[in-house]
Image (spheres, rainbow, N blue to C red):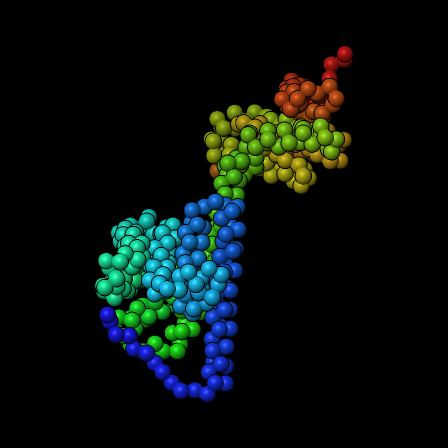
Length: 413
């Protein structure tokens, strides 16, 4: 086999036990940090069920086991003595599984398959190679050549570490935030692994700082990666919220679109059924809007729609909603105490719109609107009926000369 240098020194028992206790405390602290991060991400996975978190759990678990085998604490755990007879092979096999799972985690976490496809493929091949090395170390026929297998493993570990750093650096420069977290967290660990592999390849003495360095860099990497995973989750939530907002918003006015305002109406209807809040609907239509488009152009019409939206929003409350129902038509949902004053609110909206002077392309456009008001009564059958009532009242406002408010009156029984 390959000779391994061993350091020896003579110390008094007090100094030795003090140094040993210091090492045990430091190593236990670093391992505790890793186990804590493992538990945190385990909770993440139970809720989110993403494969990415399973990769983290797997490589972090084997990393903790490897650290415990290196310190000897693993074999003192219940059942740990079972692995004691083959501790070298067990430790090396576990160590091989760390990069085997860390690589697919990195590929997903930093999106390297899309950003650096060639290096991502190379890393994927190495991941399979590390699994193979972990198995070879247990096959009896390979035992006489264990040191050679370990030698090749260390070479691949160095190559994998350098490839991971290179690919992550490229991804980070391309704007990938997660790659930046990886570089920050794993650079100390990867540099340490390169140094440790180089030390073993050259059969150098193991310096004292390396005994602490492995556990310390692992704990640091785990902590930063968990922060990166939390940031990634927050980013996904922000993107989801933004997508939901875009799906519910009218692109021109920024207010609710037809589907979203109808959703709000249905939710308000359900709340009213539960006896929580009253509700009223205003159906607003801009007068002579087609002539505005024909005379001044569609860009001018867009400016008018935005101006009307701002006028409506100014006159309603925070719990009220306005949505573009279609073309130049808007629905307004009133809640709380404004329901009893729905006609007055509609009149204020009408007056504000009538006072608008929309400047566009050297012209000033004056606007008016016809507004129908409908309050939910016991006789109102559904949301659709409530909207139809408001639309009917709006049509009456048009018929009576436009630029006015009409409240729906149910026909006598």
